Image 1 (cartoon, rainbow, N blue to C red):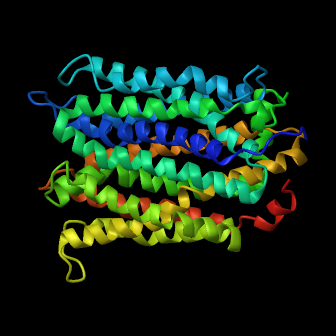
Image 2 (image 1 turned 45 degrees about the vertical axis):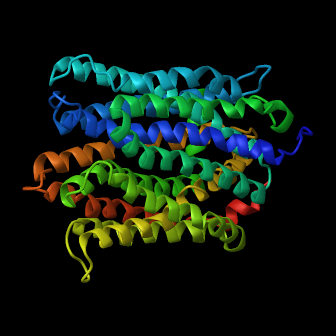
Image 3 (image 1 turned 60 degrees about the horizontal axis):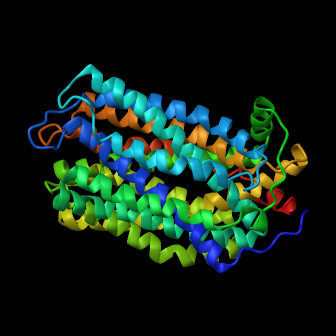
Length: 437
C-alpha cells in the first residue's frame, strides 16, 4: 500500500458536503416532480400526464441510470489522471446535473401532450446519468479516504449528516419555498444551494489521501466478479428493499398530507421534518452502536422497524388508538426517523467492508464498481417503486373520495421489506471482518 496521509477533520466535513448537494437536488426531484406532472400545481395549467404514464417513464429513466452505473464505475476504477480516479468525474458532471434538474420543471407544453412525455423521458435519462457520473465516484472515495473500520463509520456518519441536511432542506424547505416563491422559484434556489455543496469536495487532493492505482478488469468481468462477492449480494438485497419501501412513502407523502389528512402542501414539511430531526438526533447513537455491536445488528434493527411501521401508513387520516389523525401522523413519522438514522450511515460502511473482499477475488481495488453495482440494482428498484405507486393510484384511487390506492402503499411496501429481513439474516459479518484490511 502506498503511504498516504490521513484525512483530517476538515476533509471529512467537506467530503460529507458533497452528499448534501446531490441529496438535496435528488430528493426535491423525487418528492415533487411526480406531484408536479400529475397535478400541475401551477395556476392555469392542467395535469401534464396520467400517473401511470409518469411511472413508466420514470422506470425507463431509472433503467438508463442503472446501465450507466457499472459503465461509469468501471471507467472511474480504471481511470488514470493527475487529479486521481474520482474527482475528474465529479468536477465535470456537477453543473450539468443541476442544469438538467432545473430544466425538468420546464416542460415544453403546459397541458397533457405526448411532447411532454418525450421531453420527460429524454431529460430523466440525462438527469440520472449525470447523477451517476457524480455520485458513483464520490461514494468510491469513502473506502479510499477511510482505511479502517472505525474511520469508515465516522466518515459515513459525516456523509449521513450532510445527506440528512440536504434531504431535510429539500423536504422541509421546498414546501416553504413553494409558498414564498412558487414552484420554479423553489427549484432555482435549491439547485443553486445544491451546486455549491457539490463542489466543496473538490478542495480535497485525492492523491494525497487515497490510493489511486487504476484497476484493469474489463466491464463484464468487473461486474461478474463483483456479484460473486456473496456478502455483498446479501447486503444488497436488504438495502434495496429498504429504499424501495422508503421511496414509495416519500413519493406519496404529499398525497398522505393533502388527501388523506386534508392538509396543505406546506404541511408536508412538518411531517418530513419530524422524521429527519429524529434521525439526526440518533446519528451519534448509531455511530457508537455500529462500533460496539457491529453493523449487521444495527442494520437488522432498521429493517425490522420499517417492516413494523410501514403497514401503519394505511391508517393515516383516521383516528387510531384514540389519537387524532394529526397526532398519529406525527408519531408515525417521528418513529420512522429511527430506522432512517441507520440507513443513512450503516450501508456505506458495509459496502466499504465488503469491497475489501475484492482483494481475494481479483487482487484489485475496485470500490466504484461495488457502489456502481449497488446503484444498478437500487435504481431499478427505485424505478419499480414509482411504477408500483402509480399503478396503485391509477387502479385503486388517488382522491379523497377514493383513497384506497394511497392507503395501500404502506402495506405493499412492507412485503418487500419482509424479503429483505429474511435474506439479511444470512449476512456473514464475521467472514467479512476476517478479510478487513
